[in-house]
Length: 339
Image: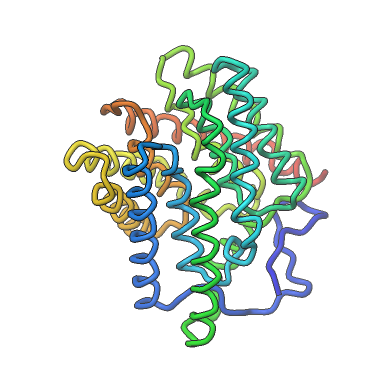
């Protein structure tokens, strides 16, 4: 049975029919799964490097691969078709908007709204697809090859994920679900209601304002909108709210790791694999389950000459969202639960 978000009170967990089940791997098998995710990302990086199509390395593949391999019966791994197609559809929206409009308030809000609409229409739990929509606008990608490039990565990941899940079940590698994983499962479910869209879109608009004022486009880096989506759509159960200052630090560190290996090793598959591994270590250090932070570690490899401004922008952007989330949760959380 699936854990899901109750429709009558957004942000609460329905357990009416929920029974404990095996979702993720034990310690040693989890390490093996993380290695498989790193090898997968290195493979995608090699394809991108060999073809010259840098956008084949869609950064959120890091988030998706880590989650589906370490949690073979988790929410994302349990929706293989949506895993494959949702980022492609939002990627099409991103290309259409980027080809038609310059970066600004209207284009960013239109792209995010369109991506969220796809997720809700499909009842898809694949929130990282929002990043697939926003990335072309942030990077200025206008090629129609972008959606097929995403499909290549997600299709390979889907095939590997299904095979890995079957192997994990056959070998009885899965552990019973823990209390922390109950929350992880709930947060990855498609959100109920629509009240949470207001604070999310207000933050996105504010983020664009700061980008315009500072010239730092990665203050509103695409995975940040994914993190915000999961936070505001599940305000009452967000596990990061108990340690609000850890999230900006963790995201800034994963960004710094990616920039470091980009500088040291270039843009090849070894550099990408090292960045992915570094991001995993950062999340383990802080005991965080924030898959989009792994996409942050991979973003330098699709950027044009990233500098130290990148991790600084990531830290500031994540801090701004954390402050807005805490303000919203304190003053409007009760109102949300009453609607």
